[in-house]
Length: 403
Ligand code: KIV
Ligand code: ZN
Image (cartoon, rainbow, N blue to C red; front, side, top):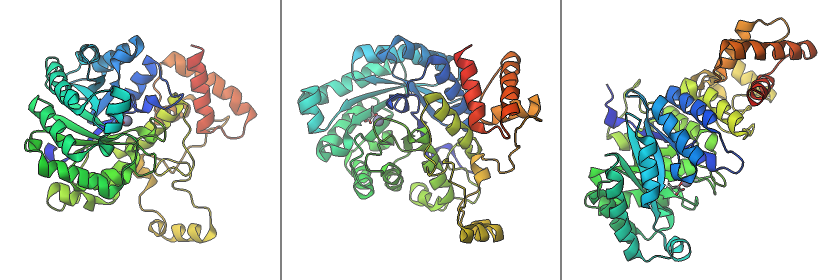
């Protein structure tokens, strides 16, 4: 039987770092819809936004805290720079959640200190315990991130982490903010913290990574093997610039290659032991929902959720798969909730099949909304042989915009 502490914590930042993707802005209702889907997916922490950045984001985080932040639901987290006004806004926004977290951050690399913050290392070491202490006046659950840790001096980082933990930080996040490190370096950075920070066992080590060199997921797998326990990731890997580590890639890598857990657990995982809290069957639905609401298409060859991820084109591959799927497939499409026996929707389809397909795609709707969308569908089905998922999503999105 797996214990909570034997699990990797999945911290989803689709609604914060993911929303920072150029053009991916979401309104409050859209954020709430995605938060509900993340709840069904089973993430442990939802980073719902950056409340000080706008009134809209404050309200969105608060409403997610009120509705999704139930006692049996995920922890609702809000981002704050290491400044009092940011922390206060974050604290107020997460207040309605049964489990609320403030995530405060300050850069620690010399490049950021010199050009962005215009502060010395000594000043940074003074600010961190003060701001972590201030965040503790709102909640016991405080995460501190050393922004640009991947390019920070290791000895200085050890001092920063020790002082954040001494001030009460319960999670220490190590971001590779610019996606610069390699798996070997990132693993060594986490190992260095374990070996050189005297109070490190009092906090959970988390990792956050960007994909500028396409290495974020590989870096995280190396981090887990060296002592990291929380992974910060986004659906479809969306996020600043080249994006963040993709949740679906991490979760399925851990699912398919369970030996990644051995160093983490200090033993072989049992065969059915759930090693994350994720319900993998919700992955495909959540991925489509996020793509639709953010307007960020998924590249066809995207791992796990791309349209071609389970498609076989060449005769040799098709022949192999027909004989035994394992010849060219390392996981089942069904394991991520991608149904292979798709009902084809056309002009003869009824309202139930239509509604059920929309629910499979992650949409929630009232009877009235369903009826209106169904009329649009029938109209389209008269003109097209087969109505695809893309057509359905276009109908629903159009209906929502004109509601
Ligand atoms: O990339 C980064 O460093 C961040 C921090 C705010 C955690 O997003
Ligand atoms: Zn980031």
